[in-house]
Image (tube, rainbow, N blue to C red; front, side):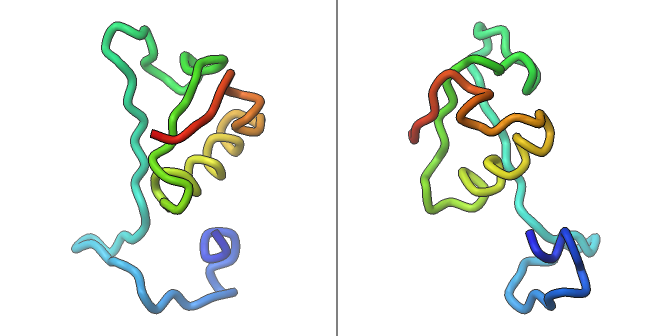
Length: 84
């Protein structure tokens, strides 16, 4: 998060760099096909299950990215949060 906010503030030393020079984590959200959820907006007010409280891509990143995208804290955006 610090490197994203101010790239000059830190110098990451243990990170994966892809062949295209990119680095970072990917997070995906999965919903049942018959749920009607196709976008983050569709998931508003629904239950969400995170992978693990110690997971960067399965918990930390979504807890930073979702409020940034929606303007609402995760616990307010979804009706219930938990872990799978």
